[in-house]
Every structure is written in structure tokens, then in C-alpha cells.
Length: 150
Image 1 (cartoon, rainbow, N blue to C red):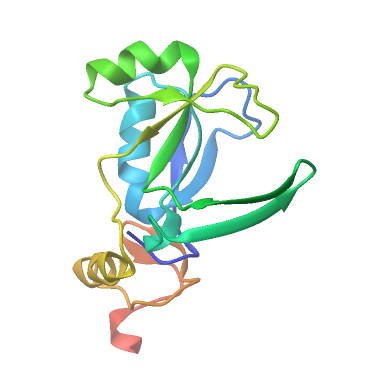
Image 2: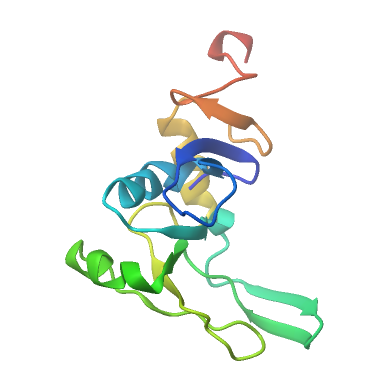
């Protein structure tokens, strides 16, 4: 899992998305690309940067919420559920704070990591410093980082 601010571009097939390319957390980007390549419409995703299971709190128009951070997940369109299950995923409905799903499902991803130590290991395996905000990666390297400069 990558630390916050480390991304790769992914080509998406969501017809409701204004862009055909979106930035995705680098540690799950290849998997998200494969999902789109297999016809699964992804709506959003997050690796959660090694915080799975940690307590989180946020506030919105419906109140203050407390929960646990998810492991790496993707949100998918309901009509992609069958294809996701054929690939071995276990999607389930995603409900917004107002109790409406709106045809959005979520599913744990197979890549990405759970702990911050997993993030550090991902950076090491990819020959990147274990730092946040490296920016966009191109072919596995941060555009503004060179191992010779470290």
C-alpha cells in the first residue's frame, strides 16, 4: 500500500465520468485498471494508506460519524456485480449516510496492504522513498523522484 499522495493514472470505462483517465492510489492502480479492462465499472477506490481497522471520525450534513477505516476497497456499479463475482470478488451494497445505495456496491480489493508497515514495504519493493506526496508515478517511478537523487 502506498502512502498518501502517491498515484498512478488509470483508464476507466465509466460513461458518467467526465475524464477517461483518473488518478488512483498507486498500490491498487494496477488492479483497478484490470477491473476496468474486464468490463467492471469502477466509481471510486481508496487504499486507505495503511489505516485499516483504525478508528476514524468524520462529520457531514447528517451528523458526526465514528467507524473503522476500511481495507483497500473499490466502489462499483451494480450492473458490474456479476462480473466481479466471476473474478472472485465479494461485492456488497454501499449505503450513503442517508441510507440510500443508489446502485453502488463496494468490494475489498485483492491488492494494497492493511498496515502502515505494509505501506513502507510497498515503497521499498517499488524502489521509492517511504514518503507521502510523491505525486504521480510513471512506469513505477514518481515523476519528481530519481533513486540517484535520494
